[in-house]
Image (cartoon, rainbow, N blue to C red):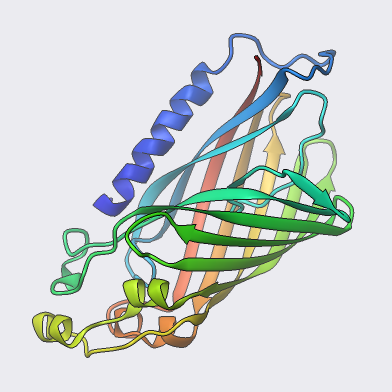
Length: 274
């Protein structure tokens, strides 16, 4: 397992431990809504995919997930690549609020082929999401804009379209296309190669990456409700790097523009009060 993913895997392990310990009391079918009662959902995911963005090598990694809602509110459908958010405003049916996520990194310690190239540190980013349901509980349009909180790692903007289809009482299927854009600092940090780095590497040429369209892709998922408190989800996230992200020698010479991630998430919900 690449060390750039180790921190994420440990975070997932901690999240899963909390998930298992959780609350001493499980959700009750006849629980009554209260302003100070919340439903917390913790999850732990294991993924198998590229070791870093643009890599052709695959490795395992982990990722925690978290969601919360007031007791009595119906859970809202979501996709496996949604980041952690909280809707604060509803403007004409458009849900708007803050969103946070983790970004992976890379280093020559993880992959020897990166020798001579600068490392990309893992990061926490934060921003705003907005989503709208043109067809309630079926068709969703979502956008996220997130800025790295340190290290000058830049800005990402992601656009999601998803169709959700319940099958029976326990299954939920979802699928939809993706598009991701990045600004100049993000592209340079992840895909640019300086002349000095090219000389040190000896395997790639200098390359200047500019902001713009970074990738297009597609995400599919199937969620099975095991019980009122437990659920499991399997998913596949495919992205094709485009533009400077694909033309970068980090991708075209050392890696691959095809980025596919398969994963499984186990989630547990429990009730807490304040």
